Image (cartoon, rainbow, N blue to C red; front, top):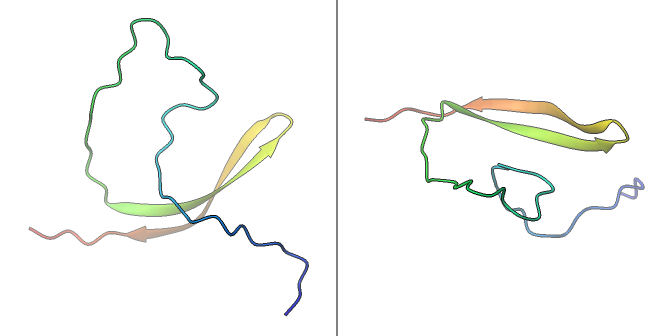
Length: 67
């Protein structure tokens, strides 16, 4: 069905953004490995606007905890 929306055909890559629009790390800044416990995950839509980027949570799903 033609609806006028063009799909992005690039493969999806899940990621965590730590910094945006950084061409070089500030002097003396070291990013060390870290870990955290995730209890859920969310789908977020980002929209670039003149005043900056806006993030909207589209959905949230709990993760199952197993011992």
